[in-house]
Image 1: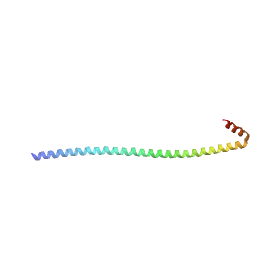
Image 2: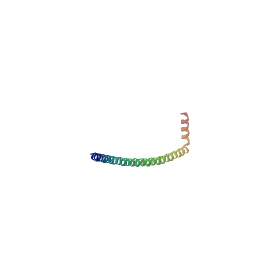
Image 3: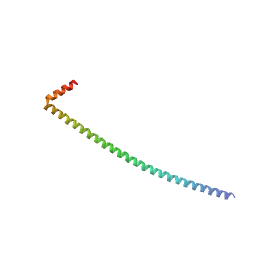
Image 4: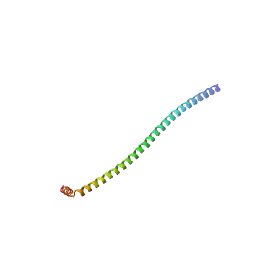
Length: 102
């Protein structure tokens, strides 16, 4: 009888071990699936970050160009104002007097 009980116990233990192994395999599959999905999301996030960095660099370059253009326009404006002053010194004297009064 003891041998029968032991063999039943051994089968029961083996069945439990097999069931536990299946559960662990399922868990590994789920975790692997989750890990793979996480890697894909991380790759997407990294790609977006790289794209945003590129956009920022492009914007910085645009700002430099605009600042240069503004400086050029100011210089052009100042040159024109000087030309106007030298062409019409009388009017400019009146203008400067008006400005001084204010």
